[in-house]
Image 1 (cartoon, rainbow, N blue to C red):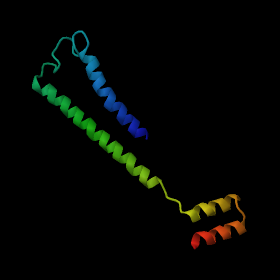
Image 2: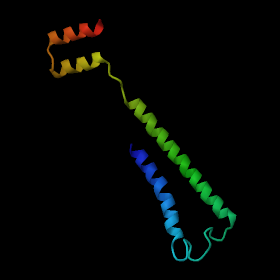
Image 3: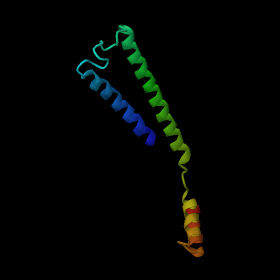
Length: 104
């Protein structure tokens, strides 16, 4: 969940920072063109940056998905019944009766 929030913030903030910089009086680089004088290579650098950002986000999302699936253990009804008995919510007779109902 935390990683998804970070990834979302990166995806939202990066373009906002770029467009905010483009609206400055002399652009981002004090009067140079938007590619900082490097011609077409400046645009390619933005594409590479965005590609790396997308790959980073992809791996963060995959890591958060794999943690979620390992960490979640599915409890059987018998496990829940045993926990209730251990906590003292039900007595031995109720436990045995419910256990028989579950097994049949």
